[in-house]
Length: 86
Image (cartoon, rainbow, N blue to C red):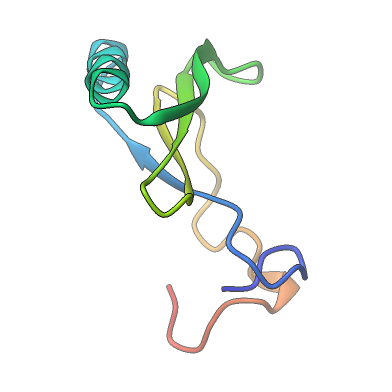
């Protein structure tokens, strides 16, 4: 998938229902040996938390909770959405 004209997907993000669930996910992944790129940190622009890790194939993943959201359709004016997306 194109990302910012670079031809790659920057990351995938998954929302969990609470800060406690986020910390539990981090602890679970760390115990299982996942490569943690950034441990849980507070989001600067919102009251939420996030952390980053890689999957076994090296893809960057994010788990977050409590962060602000963008409007549906945000970014569509860039014309980079794959056919049939959204």
